[in-house]
Length: 266
Image 1 (tube, rainbow, N blue to C red):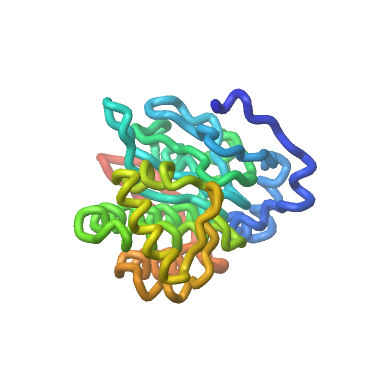
Image 2: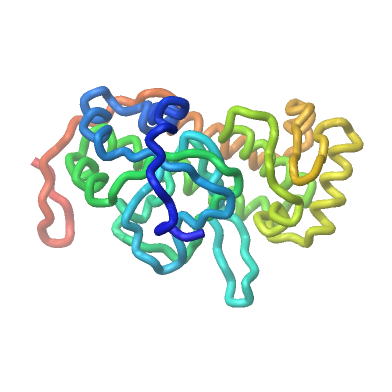
């Protein structure tokens, strides 16, 4: 499903206000109100492709519910996830990092809602150097940590540990304890064979920590998952909580100009 098929759903604003997204909620009232008229509520259906490799990004998305998977695709069609985005983040950091496109793909793996914002509007506010810039750069650092830790986890830890990490990160990005996705989809996210995910999920179900039912994973014992998971989950969560949670005061803005290959501040 491509971007052109996505339509604004004004009714969603009543049940999914923009401030359910942690980044938007962290903005001072004045900056939020400047963006508010341009924040358009949209539904994020399952399998919707938020962006594709190499394609320009005309919008960014601030999820309020649901989960978006960031994936790298190989020439043979195989894919591996390197990060998850939910209501604590934003999809489309390349827009303000100067890239305007990316070799990765972003796909909705748990249906939900988001607020869409035009790239032009985001950049106008970002370039003011105020709270939005500060919040987005802190979020980018948290996303880099998640990406790096995912690479370490995929190299050194078992499929069961990686599955626990994935389940816990997914739960952190939504309010319910149910995940509506198949084991085949999870195997694509983790970059492992489906049989490996089935075996690992079976062990978690036998231990009473999850229940599997027709494309739904119900988490029954979160503390049990936290005891089984590798340290990668704690590292990622701790950094996200430190950088993203709560309201952060922006640094005092400084006028800057480009000269001789460096930024000079007044």
